[in-house]
Image 1 (cartoon, helix red, strand yellow):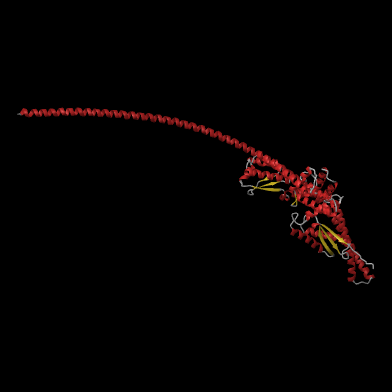
Image 2 (image 1 turned 180 degrees about the vertical axis):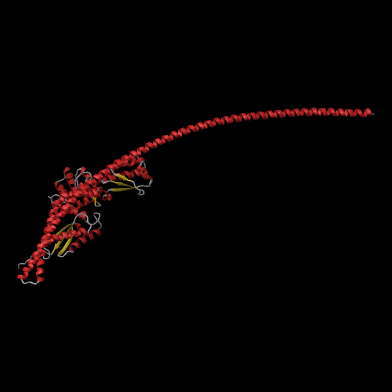
Length: 543
């Protein structure tokens, strides 16, 4: 019974122990597998960590190499920048030295100009000192004359006193009557002496006028020529925008220098918006420059080669226009057979003005007037027209040749074998030489009509009439004047006096007084001639 109980128990214990051993073996095997797996995982992790560490070391090494390369590149870039900066500094230094050299040259030129001006001023100073010495001498002479006049007046006073006493004693006159007689005689004597002094002064001035005229003209031109001709020596060209000014100037001003050298005209670019100014004394050069500039602005390509091309085109175009203008004038007047060079010179008058009046239009008008008058008088109409057309031909080239336009015109017409009548009309139309034909007289008359008529030149009709009225009014304001007439478009005033009120000696004084008042009160171009006429007529009728 006990055995039956123990055997199962032992079996159970043994089974339990075997199961435990088997479970332990299984668990141990599992634990060993897990440990092996953990060891494998650890080995893998350690290998990964080692790989990562190696990669990190490699990356750090690459980064160190990159940093070294960057550092080397930075060093190279730094050296390049330093070299570029040194080159820029050298270029800037060279440019600055060039600018300084230019400034020094410009300063040197200005110093030379200032030195020239100082020399000119010294010369003018010496001339002024000479004039002052001359004026001092004249003042001494005037003082001497005044002293002589005072002596004469003192002697006259003595004579008056003596004459009064004589009259009182001989004639038995009262004081008032004697005073009137003496003063009347003395007044006539003083008037005669004053007239004599004026005549002597006029003769002295006339004798010295030629000697001082040239110096006075030179001084006047030197002191005022820069400003007084501005209105007649400039042309204005409009620009599409302000940017065009920079293109016209060009790099370092090369376009302006090229343009001025090719045209002979100054190009002025200032603050005036959308405008450039062309300045030059020769109207034909200004016209060529204006046309060339307008073409360049329209084309837009502005550089020295293009400027030269446009200037050549403009010059050819203006030359063609000049010749066509001369031929048109000849066709308009019916003139044939004139030398082509003279026709071209005549056409240049299209670009010449005188007191605002176009000289070619003025010449055509003079030709028509002279021809009309010649036809009315039965003279050679064609010759009068030819002389009238060519009378101012010298003005076409008086900018290029020395001498007056009359002298130049005479030389031109003789050179191209114009008739002697025409040559004399040109030479005599300003009174420089005697007129040898009546056609010359007609040309003078036609020239005066064309230039002096109201509105022909730069003077309004209202101012023209006012000036003539004032001239006559001044002349009529003097006692003893019967009539006064302003003639020759205000260039002459003829004054008729009462012969019973004004003597021959007093008309000299009257002319001088009128002249002084006109100079003081009126503004006028040129000269005004004052002519005083005293005429006494006696009329008897026989029956």
